Amino acid sequence: MSIKPVVVGVDGSESALRAVRWAAMEAAARKIPLRIVHACMPVDGRSPSPMPPSMADTVVAAGRQWLTIAADVAKETWDDVSTELVREYEVDALIRGSQDAQLMVLGARGHGGFAELLIGSVAVAVSARGHCPVVVVQGADVDRTGKPIVVGVDGSPASEGAIAFAFDEASRRDVPLVAVHTWSDPVTASAFAMAPFAVDWYEVRTEEEQLLAERVAGWQEKYPNVRVQRVVTHDHPARTLIDQARNAQLVVVGSRGRGPVAGMLLGSTSQALLHHAPCPVAVVRPDEP
Ligand SMILES: Nc1ncnc2c1ncn2[C@@H]1O[C@H](COP(=O)(O)OP(=O)(O)OP(=O)(O)O)[C@@H](O)[C@H]1O
Ligand SMILES: [Mg+2]
Image 1 (cartoon, rainbow, N blue to C red):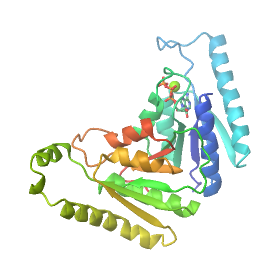
Image 2 (image 1 turned 30 degrees about the vertical axis):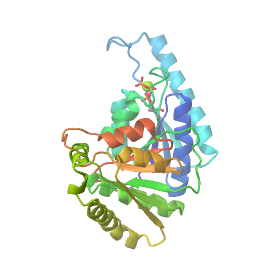
Image 3 (image 1 turned 30 degrees about the horizontal axis):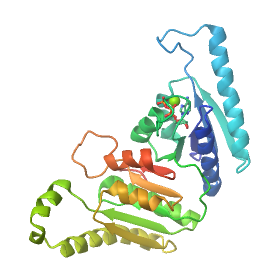
Image 4 (image 1 turned 180 degrees about the vertical axis):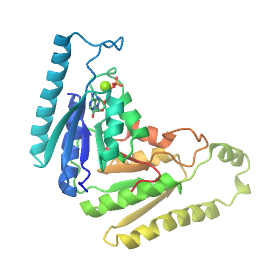
């Protein structure tokens, strides 16, 4: 069976090139191939009718050039690099491509959208529906070598996948892992604000600390070389995770947590991280390592 590669999507943007640099470092660390993909559907933007041939040729030629530039950048770090131009809509192509990938890597922004947008629609859609873990390269500096990895733990099946992924990355990179668990419930919190002595916060905190310790224990046994720092706060998870991510090289979250809206593909914490994290974000689905 052939080795599944790291796949990175490019669209000619600076953000995608940052993703290529990150993906090349990751492929080198895993010692696996890196595949660089550009998807283009040479149809007119307003209707599904084909573009005039000369226009379609220009679009495809630009795509090929972006792939060549990206491959040159990747080869500065890793030599097992291939490129592929796929004639398909980008979200479809990348989600399909994620079936045969160990990891899918994307820039936070691309060529489209408006300047103030923090994350583009392709990055959001693929993070929500990809078949493998998806890393969105947020933040200006890609090389954060030596800094810790942060993982969000809430006891949900997706966060189990996130813990597994985070331990594996921390072990490979030989860096500490910061395991974050927060507890908050805005409704009960406001109710108890009216009667602050009705709840034993010390007991709640102890229980939450225990939950985190239990979730991490099995993985710590499997990866004894990874130094784990446990952080438990009474706060919104996204706020603590973003705080911790300021000094991290990667923040890992499950695609969705224990939140009440069952149909949502991305939970509010994962969405907040994708928009606001100061470093690359890995989104892991429930059944993924
Ligand atoms: N055509 C494409 N082929 C391959 N990868 C792509 C393509 N378009 C986007 N990507 C990947 O997705 C990342 C995010 O781009 P995205 O398109 O989501 O942002 P945007 O162009 O700023 O916003 P939008 O397209 O929603 O207006 C890019 O950095 C790149 O990694
Ligand atoms: Mg785009």
